[in-house]
Length: 66
Image 1 (cartoon, rainbow, N blue to C red):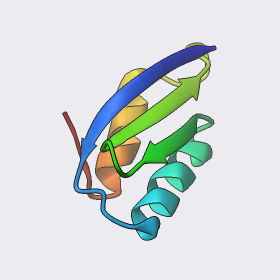
Image 2: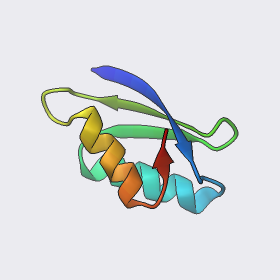
Image 3: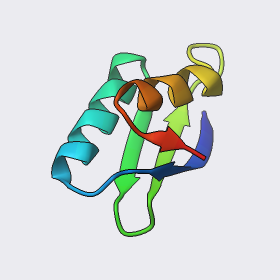
Image 4: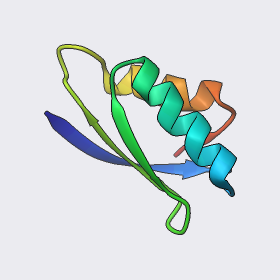
């Protein structure tokens, strides 16, 4: 299991949390959003999903991964 913390811009409310965590779950990654720090802690299996795919899933929800 690989763990990564991503800096994500544009998150401000519970809807943001639900949309990001839901999008990650759909691609078989686990995410925990921290609105206060503007980060998403992601856990995933590298043989199942790539970091690039995780970033794309977040971007598709309308947020910027920096």
